[in-house]
Image 1: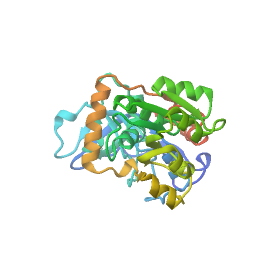
Image 2: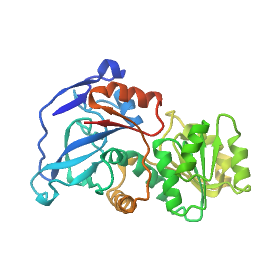
Image 3: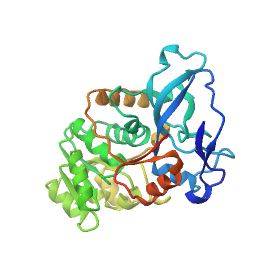
Length: 325
């Protein structure tokens, strides 16, 4: 098979290599997927630059992808042969991820992809879509709630806005940094956008919510928004925090305890099995019904993996970056 890999961490142009590797063979309970696409997420370039230790001398990056099952291991029904699937956690605690023409994974990690959903879209589900879903469904529903999505033009934020609408939130606000991103977020279903570079976020949220604040915040950077929590959250609201630009996060105790606000930290890679199965079932129904927009910012062929990683790292594109095989 053809694959991209690195044998040491560092800049994309210095460490990423494309070449031939042996085809993987599925073990018991596994399937082999002939991949059509691979999703390049921020966590992938961060891992490549050393955010987590390498678990093996050679790493094929990327956790998300989509393709067709072309071989099954012992214990897997032969009926799965030829099934269109999307893959999650391809490289989480594993040596070889989805940035290759093939991958062997436990069969649960290959989820059926509806026939009318593209492989490019399927490469965006494992991290962006499931992160958005978990952020909106953890610790109670958002039915009738006011929701703030930080970074609404990003890959997670774009899905979170749509899901908040489908999950019957009463008001959806989002932070953005440009007029173009504001249009993108509004097209996904945001009621209002807040340009955090030119507007006072606290004052705008108070104005837009009539002083109520937001009941749920889907937050990509708790280190930036953490200090604003007591001012922008409604009493007893919930912050679902899935990312931080800093390793240390601090909160001021007195305002936090008076507000009664909770902060739920989570990482989509570590979802409990029952929660993941429920999320997969729900998003599959939404996909089959054609309820979701998929923002593919750019596609790159495998031979341009360096450019793909640099594009994600530099934030060149609005939407998901997908590598095609």
